[in-house]
Amino acid sequence: AQSVTQPDIHITVSEGASLELRCNYSYGATPYLFWYVQSPGQGLQLLLKYFSGDTLVQGIKGFEAEFKRSQSSFNLRKPSVHWSDAAEYFCAVGALLMDSNYQLIWGAGTKLIIKP
Amino acid sequence: DGGITQSPKYLFRKEGQNVTLSCEQNLNHDAMYWYRQDPGQGLRLIYYSQIVNDFQKGDIAEGYSVSREKKESFPLTVTSAQKNPTAFYLCASSKSKALFGSPLHFGNGTRLTVT
Image (cartoon, rainbow over all chains, first blue to last red):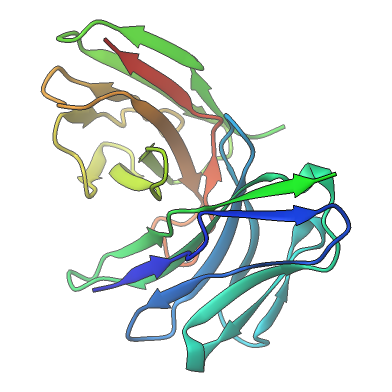
């Protein structure tokens, strides 16, 4: 069955330090991959997406993610975090299901805490 | 600015009452969705609609109902049959009818508390 795993429930990073949030998926074909960010009490905003082509994709707010087919991963990175990056981050996989419907499968999220 | 408006932001109801959550979009998107979010869990799809007057059940449709009479509007009713209705509800839309690869645009959510 298709699934998305974000192994870290919380991550704490010092302001200015680099960041990597992990995302692993289980899906038989090449998936459509997304990262979304959610500030407290708000909806989600798309950070970046991967459909095909270059496996390193750039997104908004200085984020990037790399698709590694051999590892079934799509990790999110940022070279230097800012206090405003504190939020919850969700990885999602677009998958074609058995009934030919396309659906987004979501990870449980990783909460990013920034230390001053 | 185009976007999705969910109202109200906070909603309180007594157990046994039906309640309707509003979702309006002015993005001219064909597809609209309702998700439920609980702490420590990913988003779970309740219902989605790819076109006016048509909608499909998602993974957790039991105890919920929707309508799509206008392209802009996709209200969600949480009925008394929903066993555990207290949650954060998110409405979203996407341009593509087929959902395929089309990013979602989200509203700011409605937090429903049922006591």
